[in-house]
Length: 297
Image 1 (spheres, helix red, strand yellow):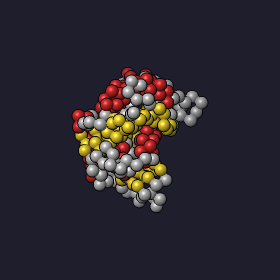
Image 2 (cartoon, helix red, strand yellow; image 1 turned 90 degrees about the vertical axis):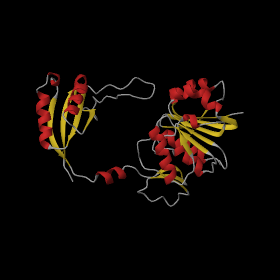
Image 3 (tube, rainbow, N blue to C red; image 1 turned 45 degrees about the vertical axis):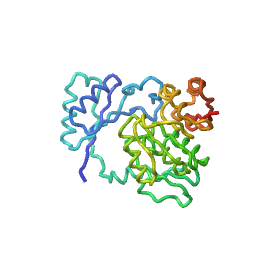
Image 4 (spheres, rainbow, N blue to C red; image 1 turned 45 degrees about the horizontal axis):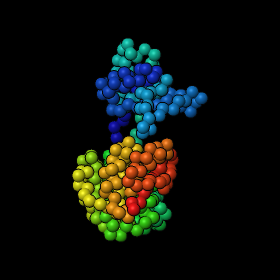
């Protein structure tokens, strides 16, 4: 295996962006920024929740770690940085070798099977399903959102798993990995349509469905035609509000609308946005996120 080397720096908040840009120009493989005062009384929290201002570039005292493929490159980068005006107030802590690891095995070890219900699990392909699993979706971490590890995904799947969708028509709007569509298939759904504005997500959904032997139609949003017995949308609050009339129009009389990607503090605004068509209510909560559902008369 090829050894990698870390260049470790301390930088004040005002210098983090310039230092990061310089490290990119100096061929750093990656750059990470963390609070140099973490786990001390001086630790700071940076917030970047949906609907809130974006987080700052760094902390008052940021620890910047740049990864290089060669020790000489890391030392050269340190020397060049120290000669720059913007490096004033910064300091170099040193260069150190990164212990050799089996990165594939390490990455895989971070993704264990995810329990949705005691009998319904999301299982990476390198794991055996738990003995109690009666329904399984095989899904590996990828570029598209939706691996079962996020509370919004789990809440949608739990809600779906509690009902029988035998022969019902289902729409997964903003499908990402296609996990919600496949969850509906595991519980009997008939015709399933999965759409997303991102072509990479559409392709991910197709591949995941094929691997799980799920038959569905996947494409861009204009593929969604007509009314559905179940409409699932795990996006974020702002686009959900914009999509309110469209999503509600796709719900058949007697059908269900299931929305996720909503923070607890956004419940009232979502309820108001959808009120002209359906009466949304909170059906589940987890880690500050909520699931809102409605039946269409």
